[in-house]
Amino acid sequence: MIIGQVLGSLWASQQDPGFDGQALKLVLPQEGITLLVVDPLGARVGDTVLVVYEGSSSRLCLGSDSTPAEAVIVGIVDRMDVAGG
Image (cartoon, rainbow, N blue to C red; front, top):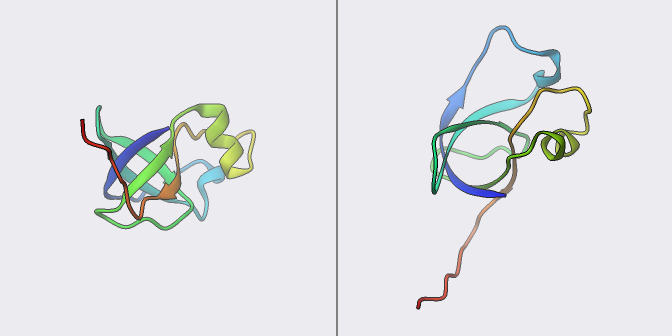
């Protein structure tokens, strides 16, 4: 699982039917490059989110074996407590 921040949305006039009704977002992980993710939860720009970044797990979250999704937002973070060291 990855923690990242929502940068914005992406719209596509032509897409796989498995994405019909699904929002597509751009997420910047804490470490890495920007990801295109499916957002079934309605995250907004600036939200910190949890992303599943595995094909089979992502499709399981969407309830589909055939949707070509590699990454899905599975949580919107309300708060993080990090112990200092």
